Length: 254
Image 1 (tube, rainbow, N blue to C red):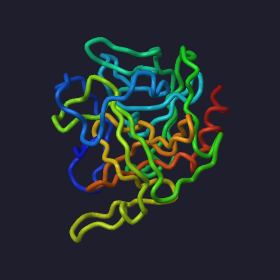
Image 2 (cartoon, one colour):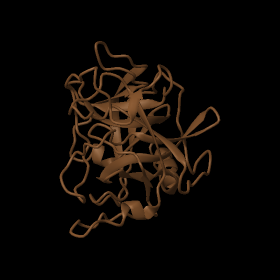
Image 3 (spheres, one colour):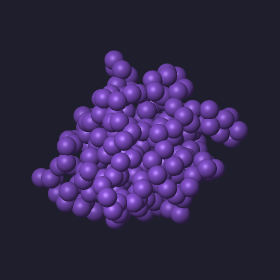
Image 4 (cartoon, one colour):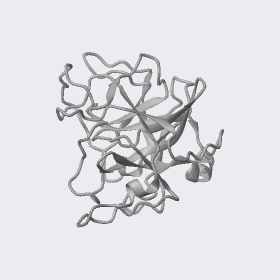
């Protein structure tokens, strides 16, 4: 959730990086701050077998979480922490459930396109705090300048992950902010059909986490963290585009 990126080069892909180091409590994510307790009960974290953080996600149904495909492709996801608010000094979470199966989008191409995946849990989570999705319960299709919130455990400017869940605020940007690059930079391959451009930088550990739009007292997931591009532009998978795929995948694996 800051200006650090997980990889070098504009077109390099932001992978889901695990993080288990202690953070300096005196340092904050650039532009972010600790989230209020209980503010985001739908937030979920994908963890490895040793409990180290891999990626962010969101609980969308009793046995299902939504994340980015690069968080499961070639990674070692083991369990999902539901309602995670703190890693240290003690873990504060609603539930932790092992992963039964993962379902990545068949058109995922390692360039940041179709970067979306579903994780089925071994059992129903001990939570009914399900995040609503754009294109499913509601149809928002955000334009330019919509206020958005990013939450996660992405590394800070110190290079360490925070002990507690952080939030940061930004807005959706014109597509050209994720397309037009200075001379000498490689093509971003940004596709507005399947991706959103928003003005808040992600960091290792934020991948897969939800990009939120708040309407009244409800949150709506309009995007999920895919990769950082350059400057203050980040690429987010456009959730509304995949509403049918999400529904069909869940129905095919009851």
